[in-house]
Image (cartoon, rainbow, N blue to C red; front, side):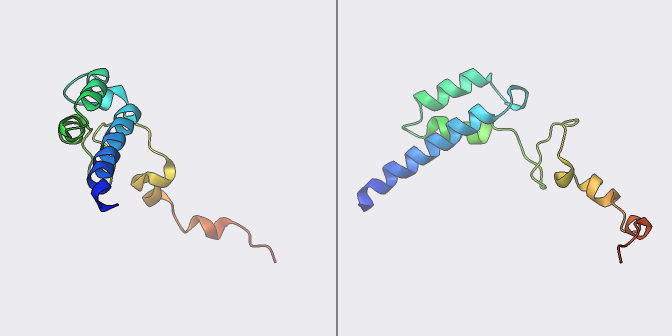
Length: 99
């Protein structure tokens, strides 16, 4: 059973890189067009060159808070730190409490 572990790890990385590439928006892909990255991952996946190249050179860079570097993209309110900071606890005082 342990002899299958390297094969399964390579397969898992191959699938992860392929799905990650497909789910990445076209404007966020670096280096080559998205379709070219898909072919690189599929053709060179068995020797790990394609998936590792995608993770290093093609994938969009992420900042410390996990967001991509693309400015102006819409962020959900519960993931937006500026929105969460703008919430004021004093607004709760204005609401009448049911008694």
